[in-house]
Length: 272
Length: 241
Image 1 (cartoon, rainbow over the protein chains, first blue to last red):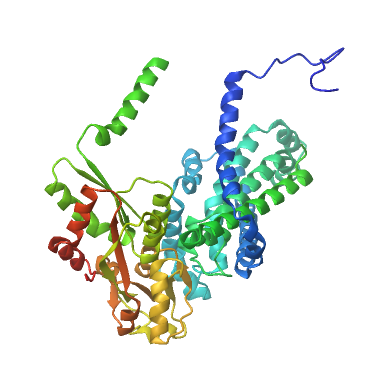
Image 2 (image 1 turned 90 degrees about the vertical axis):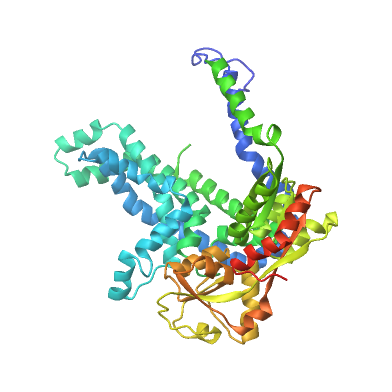
C-alpha cells in the first residue's frame, strides 16, 4: 500500500495531518542540528583524507578514544545503574539533594570538572596522595585518568535516563515477584533489569557518545600525550591551532566512526 | 501575553545594540591570552584619554583569534603572540604589523621545588615530571627550540593546549617543572618559582600588533608602543624592542 492510497476497511482511526505548529519547529530544529555538520562536510579537504587517515597519530588517537569511551561506559554502567535504582526505588532522607548532586557534572564546565578531579585524585589531592603512598598509583597523565575524566562527565547521562526508565516502569511486576518470594536482588536481576533494558541501552549510548566527545575534563585531568592520553577531541583541538583543515578531517573521522558504531548497535540490540 | 513577550524581545535587542549605536565610539581589540593583564590596563588608559570611547577586548589563543578575524569577526586591532598567526591575518590585506613586545621562556617549578630542578638539564632527569605546551601553539614551538638549543631531550608527561594550562599543572603540583613565559611566572608570583636559563634567548617570542581599521585603531597601537605602553609591558615581564 502506498502512503497516498487511503486505508480501506477497518483502518486505524485517522489522526489527521501532523499540525504545522509541530512540524515547522521540528524541521527548524533538525536544520539547526544538522547544518553545522553540513558545513564541515562542505569544507572538508576530501583529497587529503586517505593520507590523513594513514597517519599513525590519527589511528592511535582514534583507537584510544574508542577504548577509553567504551571502558568509561562500562564503569558508568557498573556504578550508574545501581545509583539510578537507589534513586528510583529506595526512599531515604536527602534523596532530592542526591538526585540534584548527580547532575553536577552536567552543569560544571568540563574544564572545572577536570580541575576538581585533580584536586581530589591529583598528586597533592586528598585521595591522590593516599593512592600514591599506599599503592604507588598516580592517575593524572595516564590512560586510566582519561577513563576517569570521561566517566565523571558522562555518568549523569546514564543515571538520568535509567532513573527515568525505572520510574516509568510498572512496579506491579516487581511487587508480584516479591509476593512470590523473590528477594530484592532477584527481583532486580530477573524483573527490573529486563523491564528497563531499553532505558539502560539508551543511557549507555548517550553516555558513550558523551565520553567519546569529551575534551575539557580529559585535557585538564589527564593531560595530552599522543598514544597515552591524546584522544580524538584533543587531537582535533590541537590541529585547529595550526591546520583547520586537518581538524575538520579528524572531526569527520570521529563522527563517521561513532555514527557507524551506534547505528549497527541499534540494529542489533534495540528492536525498532 | 505574546505582545508583552515581543516587546521584551525588542527591548533586549535594543539594549544589546545600545553601546555600539547610541553611545560614543567603540574599539574592538583581539589580543593573545598572554596580553590579558597588560592590555586590560592599557584599555583603561586609552578610555581615559578618549572620553566616550569604549575598548572591547577579545582575548584568546592567537591562532583562534586569527581564524575568527579571517572568518569576518569585526576586529579593529589584532595583537598576536606569534608572527605566523599574524601573517594569516595580514597576508591578504597587506597591512604592516610591528613587533611591540618579546617574551622569553623560563622554567616554572612549584615553590617547594620537589624535584630540585635548577636548569634545563634537570628536566631530563629520571622521574622528573615535565609539562610543555604542544608544538602547535607558540609557547610549545618556543620550548622545542629552547630545549634543542640547550641540547636536552625531555620526555614530558603532557603537551598542554596553552601556556596558562601548562602553568596550572605546576601551580597544582601535578608536575615538577614546566616551560612557560616569564610573564606567566611573574603573574603567578608566590605560587610558582621561575628559573631563567641562557638558552631561552634562542627562542624569544615576538608579539606583532596591527591596526586593521583606520582612526582609533592606529591610536591604540600608538599607545601600546608609547613610553606608557612600554612601562606597562616591561612591568609584566615583557621585553620591548
